[in-house]
Length: 202
Image (cartoon, rainbow, N blue to C red; front, side, top):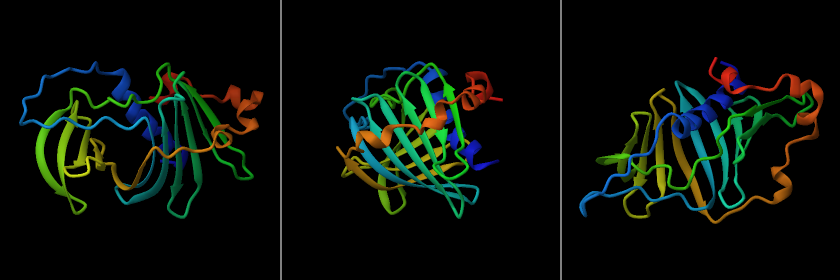
């Protein structure tokens, strides 16, 4: 799997959460924790491991402005940019001399802050040195949250991909100029090579 394909796969994992399932709203008892909604803006560094394939993801989440940004460094590989907007438009590009860019129109936007509504509580478990409450969302993603700070600690996908949360800065924002895809994402060659919703799943 190429670096760009892995980048697109990460986005697909979250797309499935938004498009394939309707949230089930469950009334929890006082003894059953519920996951803390994501802050409307945050910055996080994630260490990703997928069967030994390693990445560092610089994640910027900005719900008020309808945008999400994953800056992805493959181990000894490319630096890739995955820029997602709430209107369903996503850009996957590099800023090197190759000027790679692919686009996708996926009809749905970024994850809502309450995207974990309806997740099933599984109890507590130690992971990455933290005691966490654990939830599973539609047998697709397992979400680990520190029981004391309520910060996310670890995500595990059914595919075997795991994210370790290294930093979590609530309220941190990225300057607006950094949210602009490069001009070559908008030329005719890249428009012709743009991804469709169907091709993302092929």
